[in-house]
Amino acid sequence: MNSRAAIYVTYAQRSLLIFVLVCISIWPGLVLKRDEGGFSNYGIHIKTAVVYTFAYVVCALFTFMAARAVPRTSATLATLARILNAYGVLLLLILFSTYGYSLNTALKDIHAVISLLAMVFDPAVCVWLVVRMRRTHWDRFFFCLEFLGLVIGVIDFLKVAHVLFASEATLAFAFGFLIVRGVHSLTTAPSSVPT
View (tube, rainbow, N blue to C red):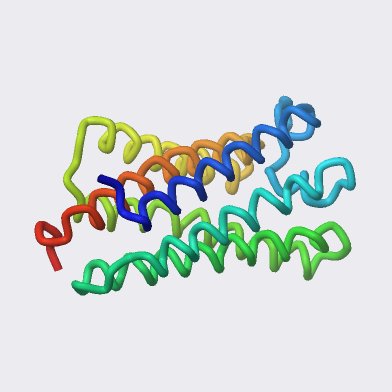
């Protein structure tokens, strides 16, 4: 039986995936090209800005709802709720820093720092989750995929290749799977959760 927190976090990740796919279907060449840009490019063009905004706002709202639904019956669950709240805030920071990042260097740097924080936050949360949840072989696969996304991100950061969207997509997809599995695992059997 799924907990309310697991249901909300599932809605959050599904909505993000759906809106990302809608953005890509509206303008695939913005990120699916040889010298690809990041997903934030969808937030600065009128053609995709509304869908891009929905991607982050809906995901953040469901994530906050999931955080509120997590029972605070152990230190682990209280930390899980804080992680979900932090993730929701991070989504909104990414969203609002997107709108002006093309205006000047300072705003671009702010957006880059927030995006870099997200790129580190996701794998750190995945480590935290995988250590605490009942694991399956799929969890291990997506855990490895998360770190592949991080490696791709480092390749982009070092300017070896411009593969930002590949990194973002890999990180987000693996994180989405693991956060849903982790919230489900930790909130449906709290008595077996280590503290």
